[in-house]
Amino acid sequence: MQGLFFESDTGVRMVLRFLVLLLGFWTAWRTGRAVAEGWQGYATVVIYTLLLGVVMRFLHYSLFQGPFISPLLYGVDVLILLVFSTAGYRTRRTTQMVDNYYWLYERTSPFSWKKKD
Image (cartoon, rainbow, N blue to C red; front, side, top):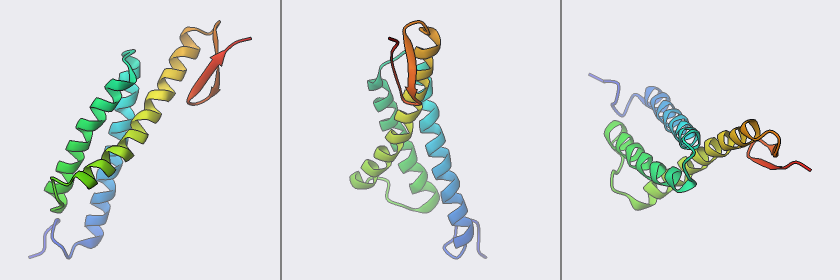
């Protein structure tokens, strides 16, 4: 009998992989925003993203029988997650700076601000 996680369920496995990736990306984005919301530094984002990389490796191992201890795949996971967590951090920090110090700063992009002239 074929189940949800067996090799012949390629369509279901692909959808599940996509959902796990979406979950990881969304979690990284929200992690970056949460760190910025607490006015913590960028180093905290990196630490949380490293931990999130371990969680993603575990999900790939437990759901898809992928390697759990693989420095290369862990590095790729962390790099991709760091892009999303950094984007979440910078967008929230930009909004904070522009909204809280509206007399000092203006938004130049979703990721940056500058002093008003």
